[in-house]
Amino acid sequence: MGGDLLTDLTELGEFGLIARVSRGLARRQVAPAAGAIRTAIGDDAALLAPPPGYEVVATADALVETVHFRRDWSSAADIGWKALAANVSDLGAMGAEPLAALVTVALPPHTELKWLDAFYVGLGECAAAYGCPVVGGDTVRAPFHVALSVTALGTVPEGQAVHRRGARVGDCVCVTGVLGDSGGGLALLEKGVVRRPPGHHRAVLGWHRRPQPPVAAGAALARAGVVTAMMDLSDGLASDVQHLCRESRVGIRVQAERLPISDAARRTAGELGVEPTHWALHGGEDYQMLFTVPAARMSEIPALLGPLGVVATRIGTVTARGIEIADVGGAPRPLHPLGFAHFRENAPGSR
Image (cartoon, rainbow, N blue to C red):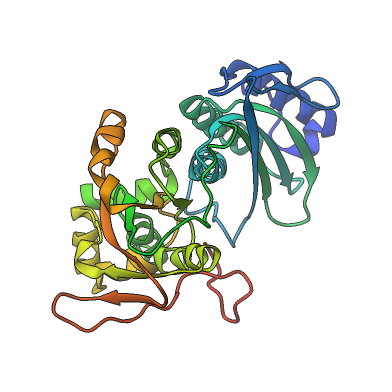
């Protein structure tokens, strides 16, 4: 996409931009993980073919510069990766495999073409990693900041989609992976301590900039019929358990000592004078899976997720009411969400 003398969008124009984007995506196009693409970029709309006996799962996210990302904190390629990763994470949370994505990009007129090219490189890398080809979208002018809108489509066998509403009293509450790395990465960026980062800083920065949601794990759990409810962790565990409890009409008690926190996050938290459980509970953008499973079926989880390189940790229990957290030997206390909320007064300026 590079190699010419043009430098920004004012020189390229709308139709030149569309042609440039189309060429770049065509070079990186991948086969979908769950279905077929009959027609992609080039027609008025894409034509997709889900397998017989499958349902289509759809999700959409908007990302706005200075709210969801800052161009001085993340490379264009990282922003492209994360824009799609956040969406395929939602597909995995429903037990779906990715089929295709539509991406709309709103750009200020003096956006440099090298930034745009790098954005589509990162987008294409994530598309290839998750088998989720980009089959269309739109490019429009924005007055000041970059804005992105991504719609991702997936497929799941009929009747096997997992919802937030199925948790039952006595179920085990589990999460995949570790919690808090993204929150640690954001904290480092906010403090500006990212020059020549040591290894543990690179780890948390890496997850914040390029999360790798365990989409295949969500699909495997759904196929096995072992989970009663599931969702991805985007707003922070303390916030997201509220959603699951509300939909399932249950409560949850989290055991603080069971929260899976990486050594990198713990070391970073110690350096910044932060309790690492704060990032695990409220940091957000971990893009792990939160799910509930009957206690009698917990023994099946390692065999399901082990071949995928995914570890799940039991962090609590579904209760009849209340959302609580308990420390070792301590009385349970209410678990209140403190993570990012778009329309809360004094919400942070970047997410």
